[in-house]
Image (cartoon, rainbow, N blue to C red; front, side, top):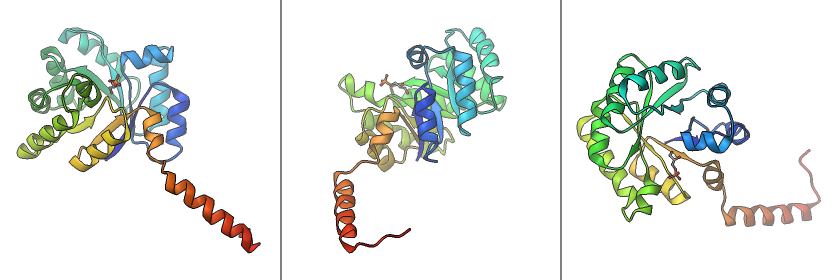
Length: 217
Ligand code: G3P
């Protein structure tokens, strides 16, 4: 499963990129606003930091203006992935852009039927929001299971990009189900490394090593 960082904070992306485990980045208008940075400028910097896809979202609601915005965004770098909302105009834009070889991430997906439409529109990625689904009394991971089943039934190439990931169990379940990608805030990705028994084990080994009086270097 690929790991994308869901952030527009350059320092956080640099930090994760240094682990060699970062496969891409997703941003959205709220994350850009939170960064306080110029959209074009910060997207360009992110694209230079990671080799994989960097999602940059259009804000227009109609197909014609979405296409114009996408034209501007895709000139930023070769690894820009245009993010469009799961609406009729968003999917028209998705079809036109992917037909042209541009990567598209269809976002704000909340049902398996919507994911089916995104795949039929040729989306590169579909982004079901599991955390927001949970917030509203539905099981976000059931949605991922349904999408996996449907995509496998028809051999769709669209990758399931689990979004709105809030904690490590969302990551674990995504991997169990066989999602292609998950995008999470850097804090969640970093917490995947943690285990109390790893820390305790290191502490014990170092104590015993010190007692030997030896050194490797
Ligand atoms: O990738 C979409 C994500 O940014 C939404 O996350 O936590 O705002 O629901 P959240």
